[in-house]
Image 1 (tube, one colour):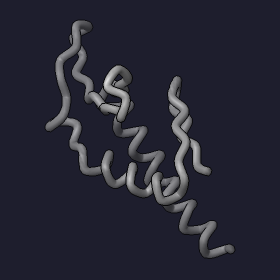
Image 2 (image 1 turned 180 degrees about the vertical axis):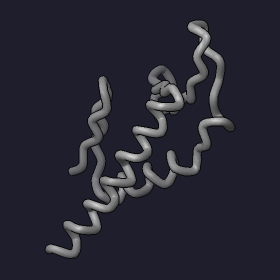
Image 3 (image 1 turned 90 degrees about the vertical axis):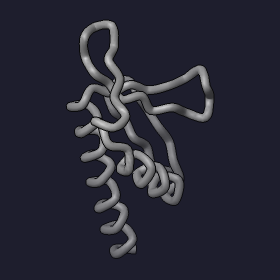
Image 4 (image 1 turned 120 degrees about the vertical axis):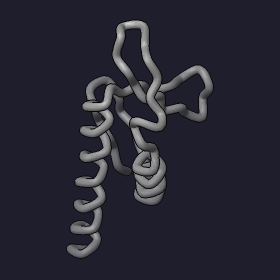
Length: 83
């Protein structure tokens, strides 16, 4: 099981689910997907299978989130080589 902990989010995945999720989010460009919010900031909305729950990220948060997932992919590769 893999966990992504980012501020107030905790997401849990199997390795194959994680790889699929990373590919999905990596293909989402911030500029193409962002919306203005009432506080004046632009944020990207990441929808979940539950239509009542969505995650929102500022551009900096989105970049940090995706960078952390890329680092995790590298660690998955390292672990698979060690095992």
